[in-house]
Image 1 (tube, rainbow, N blue to C red):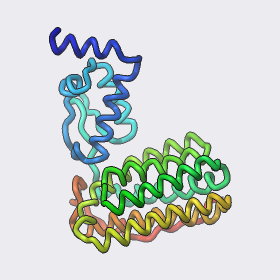
Image 2 (tube, rainbow, N blue to C red):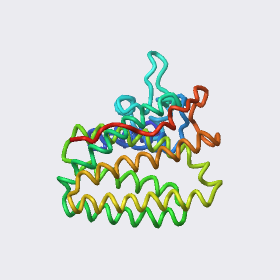
Image 3 (tube, one colour):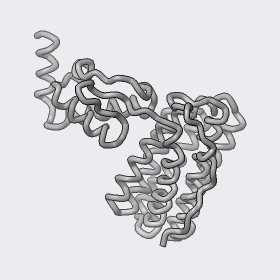
Length: 259
């Protein structure tokens, strides 16, 4: 059987939609972990060969990734990994501040004991991964921790918005990781604070203290932004266009509490 026939057979043997999901998951991971750099052109034929699927599942996956802002669909020119521009960073943090505060406020009121247990387990795993500087594990565990908080808010519209912001945040985090590797003291200080803030969020949710959860959400956004600002100021940012560098990204967050 030829390679093309084998690929066709594999595609036919999959449950409907699984081919598109495989392409989506594979490409999304490549983009979030910067294996595919911003601005990289995406060709459909290599994806068909890589995942053993036809053109239709590839197109479905690309449309889904475009809806999340991870790729740009170009008329008559295929697709490209979406650029990350520093001019967008202040607006990103503005949106993350509001959404993270809302997620944690709602989750403090609506969380289940099972979700709290899962968050505690994930934070222990994150601490272990940070100790060994396992960047891939840290990224995935942190993502899952925050996705659990999003599930706990019991509002699919808020959850979907938050998860889209987290995708952008993961790309920013990976882009700035190189600067952390060059400063062991920063690594210990920064990731130690992340673990402590995760624990504090869990405790606030345990008490169903929505006000405290919201305050901690803002502090957590500020901590993440301090890391990105530091990377920008030192020039250790991978895949981020610094041509429009602005001090606005360092301005403290403001705004009233969410009722």
